[in-house]
Amino acid sequence: MILDCTCADITIQKWENLMSNKKRFSYKKLCRLIKKNLSELYYAINLNFPNPYKEDTFETKTHYILTHSAIEYFFKK
Image (cartoon, rainbow, N blue to C red; front, side, top):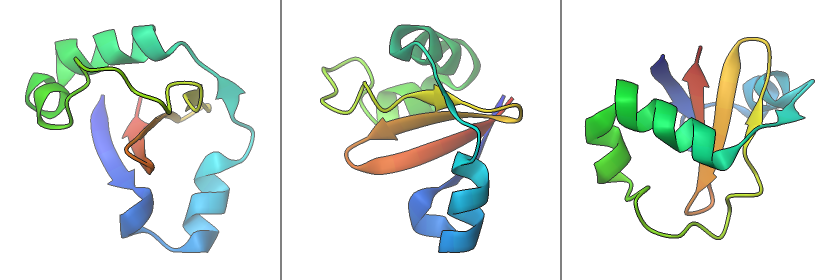
């Protein structure tokens, strides 16, 4: 698992491609995966605090998508 990009780093066309065929995914499960695999990022974006965007957590065949502070983070599986 790696951080591939954020919505601020990509074009709208790439964003639409990454968001296509998304399905809901457990926010808690994704936070656990990030903490296990990318612990520095977990604390850097304060995933240990409440997130009002937690309902906007998804997965696709290739990526996990986490929304935090109105930024979408795309993690390559």
